[in-house]
Length: 512
Image (cartoon, rainbow, N blue to C red; front, side, top):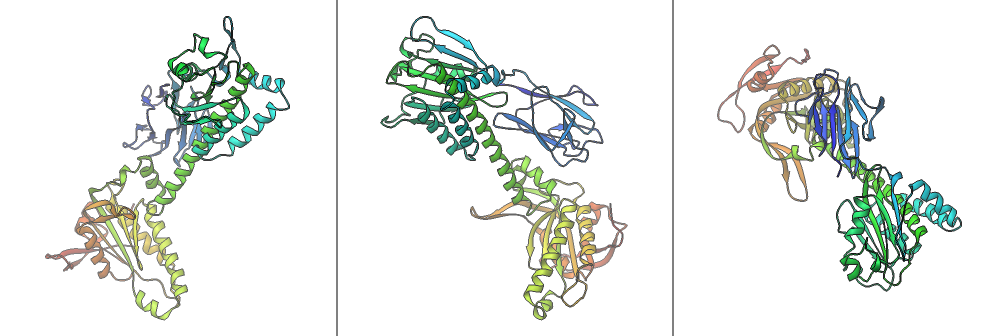
């Protein structure tokens, strides 16, 4: 297998190498997989990842963009020796053991008698030869097969189509499709009348020729061919066989093997040429299907995460494969909002008008919370519970919560009730330890926080007047908010034995 490496070629990290064994996140933040300290590099700038056998780079909505060989891109497949530039920092991607390109497939035809003859023919030459050999039949078959394979979007049906095409087009009794370096087939199909086609093994020597050496080979008499003779061919009474590699962009991604037990000379050199073309079409279709599935999965993940998290936080969670959502004890800040007089509004206005008001209200709240990369935990009737400092750690979570509170009041001051009155909002913010993570049953879970800090924030919002943000000394201290916080006195909080010192935040002085 090829070993891909990313090397920084300029800047303060020049010479730094990163093996691309798994997904790599690039950026200025210290929690990235590859840290680039230049100020023009975004905190989370780009990621490099593999889909099947293809390596991609994707920009993560960076400020200065990501370029490959000088061209700006949002997502792009990479080739050996490509130059990736993030901000002003350039890196080179290199493959230590680069495989030959698909245009160098070796096609070997073993004659039934005498010494075998070997021909090295490019894929382009093969495609031309197929058309010249039987333009009325085989060229049409190739065109139809290509269209059919490219239209499939699921791996299982795709493999089924490939196998059926081979059986319908060639004198095939059994075919096997292999992916990667695994000698176990992903699919085995056989013509009618062949029972249990998956019981006998396929020739490892044939597979090795295709997957490791990139060769396509036909043997007209397997029993007499010393180059491909193997226990599996003998055990299966295989008379004729062919194998061709399935190519991706630069890699062999698998192989296709077809067999005939009935007779020798079941396949000739032109059959092999056709198999090579079909195998390459299948390889392209397979990689396209993998890419489509990856894009679909990413889209679904982003859609699910965007319900609760800002785009930046959602992308971080997705890149960590969900590990950021495990249950853990964290120091966080909790924000509660509440509409003052909502019960009276409900009694005197139409439900349709109230729903419209709530939707606009929740929209503004979500925008304010996401602006500082907070988490919308849940909507609580006419209120919102938001978390800061989780799931992505934030050292300044208290200041973020207060900024969100100020922004919420500013945004909601523009909203009007059905009676034309300004929407009156109260806010409570508390800072402290909590257990955060998924909570619920196997069928339904939600990401939330459990702890006394949540109870305190809920009680503070009950005490807050319209247009007021109330908090406690832990938030003031953690957020360094002494200049913006005014003591309003000690209060008894339901569920706590001791009084808490409560502060009112100056909402007219935005904090950085």
